[in-house]
Length: 275
Image (cartoon, rainbow, N blue to C red; front, side, top):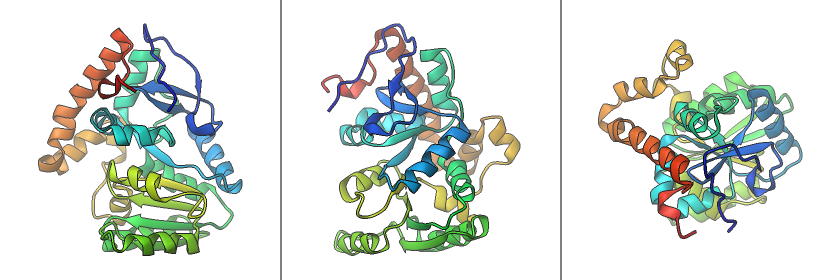
C-alpha cells in the first residue's frame, strides 16, 4: 500500500490520481486522494473510461464518508483503489483550509451520474444494484426518461443474503453493464465493489449511496436554490432528523476538527497513523 504524503503546512501538493486513472491531480483530504476536476472535465474523462472499457471503481467523498474512513481501516484501504470525487461543501471547506482553494466543481453523485448518462449519446447498458426493489425500479424508470438512449437494467435490490450473492455476481458477469450503480450505503457499497467486482462484471461501478432513492422520488431533494446555496445538508437534516442528526450535528464539527489537525500537524488521518 503506498504511503500517504504529509501536508506539513497545508500547502497544495499536486499528485496524480491514485490507481492509474490519469485524470489530473488530487487534493488529499484526511489521507484520501480526491480528484480535482471541473464538471466538464469529469464528464469527458468518465466518458472516455467507458469508451475505452477501462475498469474503474468510482465513489464520492463528503464529510460523513471521510469520518467513516477515519474509524474503518478496511474502508479507508479500499478507497486507495477508487477514483474518489468531491461531494459537498464539507470537502470544499477542507480543500480551502488545506490548499487555499476549493475543488473546481461539486461532483456529487446525485447530479453527476444523471448528467453523465445524459452526456453519453451512444447506447450503454446501465445496471442498478441496491436500495429497495421499488426504489430501484422507480429509479430505473426515471433514468429511462432522462437518458432514453441507454438500456437500464435492475439487477437486484440491496437486501440480499450471502447465499444470493453468487447469483448476483454471475448475473453481472452475464450482463456486463458499461455502468453499474451500486446503492447500499457507506461503507458497504465500496467494500462490496472492492471485494466482488472486476473488469469481468462491468466497466464503471459507481458507489452512489441514496441516488436510487432520490431518483425514485421516495426521498425528496432540496429545492434548487438550497442546493446552489450549498445547504442541502440542512434540508436533509430537517427531513430526517432522527436518522441524520449525528451525521451532521456531530459529524460535521468532527470532520472540520480532523481537517484542522491535518493542517497543523501534517497527520492526515487519525485512525491510520500506522499505515
